[in-house]
Length: 432
Image 1 (cartoon, rainbow, N blue to C red):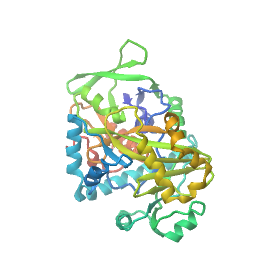
Image 2: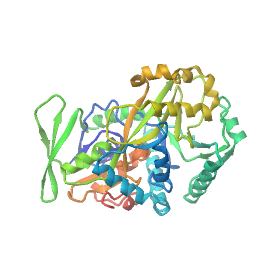
Image 3: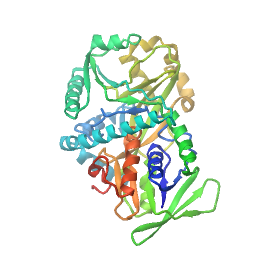
Image 4: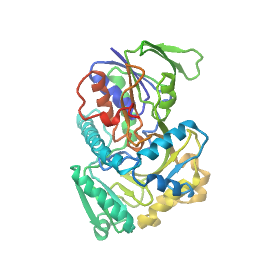
């Protein structure tokens, strides 16, 4: 049985991994060369702490206010687009407490399941991606943010997660070089992190070694459908005018932010918008950060690895483009020393924060990628409506890496007609 996976990000490659393990002949079709997709520049978090979907109470109100601030962490670019209007209306309807509450258990179950699979990959010895199980700290500076995060910590404990509330003196003790200027923080002990660049370089090589065929620089251009199934998938390689076709028994759509356009070619509809995010990586910073952390009011994340530090933020909803909005990058960099004043005299950080120099070298210094954002903040994992042999696996937003291995395993289980390792009903792509 031949399975065709469309998309070579962490979701697509994880799906290929488990399908091949289950005995499928697998082909991956990827429009790029696998050297810099959205999975490369993310923060590397495996984060059971992220059980609150993006469509959460208060998100619409915050989004409206943030639209008037060019440095804000969340922005929806207003456009005369039916897709954006449809997505926005669904997002607004989902941004309520009832949705957040019923989404928490499915999300945390899938996050923990996926983390266990990544642990298995690391222990297997064929992949080395610097998995570190140190937890993640949510720092807050204001009373309002503290109240919200302590409530979040209580919910996390109810879901079975391990948390520890830290006071100002405690966080300054565990981060002595940076002396966090915060009221305190919450340490989510179940969180872990890895180096995504290493994973995304090694995983394709491992798959090819195991017999998976990867067609790089190949873009899907159409589908041949008959009797409610996809009979053939047409694709074209970069620089070629010839259209080729494959005839798989199973098709998996895991093309991230490019999924809605491809879905339409197969008579499917996926409410999804691209969410641009930025990150910057410092090589050998002078000041050592010991724990991954999120600066809550600024919505800025930091991930330390042995020889580098990554800083990332923003969710910019809009069309796919290659523009970098400098004020948003500026907002990220200004937030870091407000929370971690030790970086003010770190030469490596100061060089990055030289805004005039950074502006001149923006393309070289700043990475950006497009997260696929579903209309209710939950991923789409399951069989499509119009095509019996099409499984959709996209819409993971900021949780693509965290949910990657778990999603791949679930897709393989669905494809083989096996019971799902964790419940998948909440992720049904036909839920609207």
